[in-house]
Length: 343
Image (cartoon, rainbow, N blue to C red; front, side, top):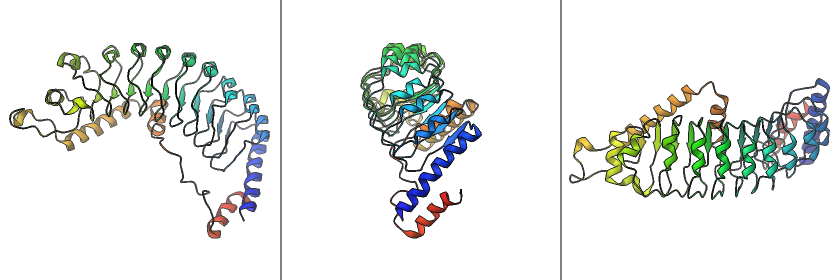
């Protein structure tokens, strides 16, 4: 039965490609088909502007995909790639690229050829470093590299003057390059779950920052009240689950400066009176939700903000697809019908 289903699935995919060629389609969706190879016929889909290949079993991308010179959107997330397909770097019209949840430890220097790229997701791939050539992606507005093994960021990151959303959550950063201060358009900065020892000083020089996540780091240097005053332009500064977050000094500062978020600590009579205690956990959570809602409302018209909210949550390989481990005939028949009804 599986071989029959494979037959119909393969022919359905080819039929979709042929239909796209005949109609000179702008979009082709081949996600969730358990494909192990991209059909070579796809090189003839020269009118494509959007190609979805995510949620398959691809181990490689054919060189011929570089012929799709009009392509602006390409999704390859949740496949089985073990390296970044270098042919992608010849798709110079790309604006959106997602290669998350593959095994991609390195990006080629040629990534800098994608000068029109606006959104790039490379989450949970085991990435070891960002190449300095990332500076060539000068139109980049959204960059997500969460859940990797980055120990540093390149100084050239500061060249991305259009960047508005940067998430480097759950990596191994011990420091942040000073050139990050040059990201004058940055509104959302996520360094959660790294190895930072102090609040980066350059945040004070970034007036458009609204949301900063520094929680779950190793920060043990309490900022002064004057330094925190300079960060009042930040709507949310999350410092919870750091060594400093339970200190009496920071707890008091968090009480007086509502944009600072730390976990609740019950303070004894000697450290503060009842009027000096911080907000309850419920109040902080309510404030956080309100701040998040306000931020999303403020940026609602921005597609990069909306894409970031959805895609930055990529964590593990998706196993929700109907086609995984299908053995029961009652499940297989509807799966076959998905392809048969097309003919």
